[in-house]
Length: 177
Image 1 (cartoon, rainbow, N blue to C red):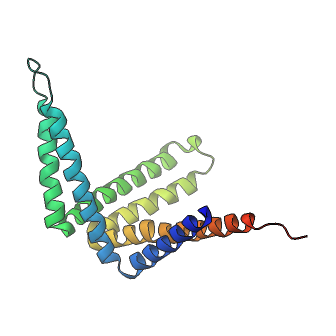
Image 2 (spheres, rainbow, N blue to C red):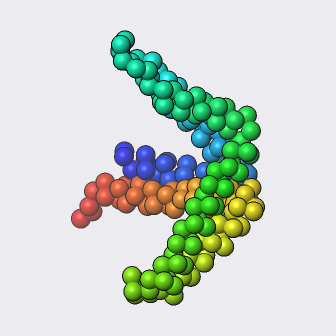
């Protein structure tokens, strides 16, 4: 019966993938809301752990401050999910841009570090361009990131899970004489 679990998991993943690709804006809001909930849970857990410091020991100020910041950011992510989505997209954009610049600099100034400096430079340029697009158009960038990573991942995961289920089911059939 294990084949059914793979098959059902695959169908659910395909449905999620199609829904994400059909409505990436709603998917961004869902992912941002889940991020906010995760921040709240992690921050509350940090506060609880920080409160359990034995008497006589100094209070852990840094974890308490970080937990308070996490609570504020988690609430902002839940109340204003598009602001959180834009902020997360900007972080990704800056990282893409910076990594692209590093790859371009490596290709130009240290070509001996790779056998393919032109390809390294081109990948760096791609990072700079995409980072710039995501930075200046963060809502579009958030939708593209969610659609690509969550949507296409779910589709591929679903197809592979269905394949595993079909394969497992065919292995269960008795061999005919």
